[in-house]
Image (cartoon, rainbow, N blue to C red; front, side):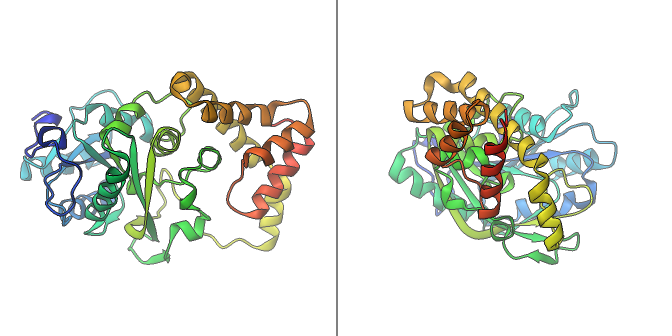
Length: 342
């Protein structure tokens, strides 16, 4: 069965907006896997148990050497109308590019992204679709739209480590529509995201400089569309020894925090990474950006590269290139005053 042959009608076929109450709009979950047999069944079961029933899964494995592909084929045989596995191809070598393959194969009007080791709460998709319906009522269906939620951080056994990832990581979700904030600090965790067709389509031009699919999608939503945050936790975000992306769950001492503040290498590396993303955004979508957003991206490059320290720190303050936390911003201010970042 091909990816676009799932049963169920899309909103393009019915002419309807997203409606979480009648579930007539098909939501496709893109599941990227690689050596994930340990937790994969639990994740898939939580997706198929969603109270939003018009839901299907498109999975792609990136060259696993364990039993992951056996599990995927098993679910495809058990749920032929709801679960499809893409043909095995050459490994992409990264989660980002694995998801990009899935994104290019998807034909649904609404898409979610799934990691292989989390657990979704049963109302994750229905909550997100209600938020999507609200967005569409204000912005229409042709605007790139994004919905994302908070997560509960758990350990291998699903015991709670942190009740809220947003609180633990200092994420300020209300800044999702602030391009300067999204450029400096990713706000969206991909496994919570729901996007409409328009946002998915413009995200397919994903440059190599993009760190991950979720940060690139969030950047595009901020620059071209609109987003809605759902403050409820809809995902049990599992932290274990093989996470591709995760958060530091260790409690840090005052001395560790001070050493990190003084060292600064991580901040400079992050700034350079963000510069490459800004350059890629201008290269790929520069002609479509509104003048305000194009000017902001150009300012970010100038902020780190100017020979004048006055220009560097002044640009940071003028365009509010801030990250969560006073200490981080003071440190970045000092870094920019001392030397060029780019």
